[in-house]
Image 1 (tube, rainbow, N blue to C red):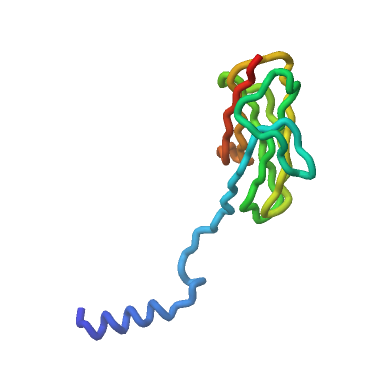
Image 2: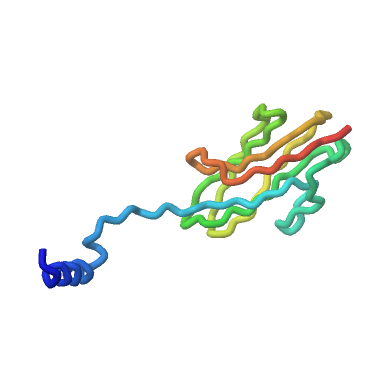
Length: 133
């Protein structure tokens, strides 16, 4: 192929509208920031830590989910020693949405974790904590 023909072909291809190229739809990328805390006041976590006393009575998992292009649902999955204790579905109604769930301690100590998962089961974030006597 002659160099002139290559230049002409490249010029033609570069002039095609983007709609002519096959495009893969871009899925929104959800991200989650989360903390375990002893309360939530004015939609902000209070008493955030990684170690809590059993005397706290209950804990909250506060999360901020960003990147949504529309309404969706995420789930807080509370675990203790790898065993699921609770799954709390929460709506996400904007690009930056704060929400929280609560778990009573019921006199149980040990290692815990909360995962935030999206509607398809992908983990968006996780936080570990310990409850002491």
